[in-house]
Structures are given as structure tokens and as C-alpha cells.
Image 1 (tube, rainbow, N blue to C red):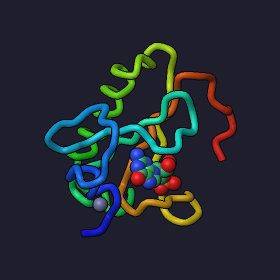
Image 2 (cartoon, protein in one colour):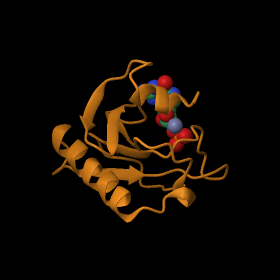
Image 3 (cartoon, rainbow, N blue to C red):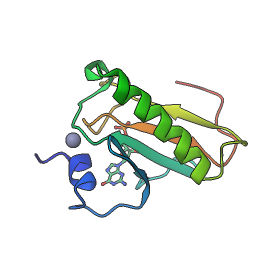
Length: 111
Ligand code: 5GP
Ligand code: ZN
């Protein structure tokens, strides 16, 4: 499997880990769009949000995002959790990922 995020999860490509549990892995985005920009991914290769069927994995992803916010110290100041899906959603990497963005006041525009 040549997926870049699968390779990061396996440790074949270096990354700065923020959090990990049985189902999820979180690491710093290589090109941060905000002072805090961490990606949460399922360890299982799931291409995009349309393929996310498993309730417990969905719960684990959101719990991981909460944990990332805590560890990055942005729980109180606030943050945005974003999933881009497909071409119009500007999803570039075809392995489901949730962006956790914060550490500063974010642009109020969503699109
Ligand atoms: P997308 O546009 O698919 O929602 O976001 C993909 C994200 O993955 C981008 O923010 C991009 O900077 C990040 N990214 C792409 N390749 C790598 C990589 O090799 N390492 C890390 N840490 N982030 C990456
Ligand atoms: Zn993958």
C-alpha cells in the first residue's frame, strides 16, 4: 500500500506524533495552515468520509480530536475540526483525515 498516510502510520515516513490509540493516529501537518494544525487519521485505510461506516471508529476519531486539542493547549481558546471530502472538498490525500486547526483566530469564512 503506497498511501502516504498509511506509510506515516507505519513509521516509514517520519512525522511528529501528537496522539495515538488503537484506532487512530494524530500528527502535525507538514504545511500548517494555522499556528496549530494537526491531522487525525484512522489507522485503517479509509479513502474518504463517504467510506466511514463504523460507529466506533467515528467516535474514536472525534475523541482523538478532543485529545489533540487538549494536548496542543487549544481546548479553551477554541479550534476548528474539518474533513475535506472529494474534489470539490479539496481533498488531496485519499486517506480520511480530520484537520484540527487553531492556536489563533481563524478566518470566519468556511468556503
Ligand atoms: P487535504 O487537502 O487532503 O484535506 O489535506 C491533506 C493535508 O495533508 C495537507 O494539509 C498537507 O499539508 C498534509 N500532508 C500532505 N503530505 C504530508 C506528509 O507527508 N506529512 C504530513 N505531516 N502532512 C502531509
Ligand atoms: Zn492509507
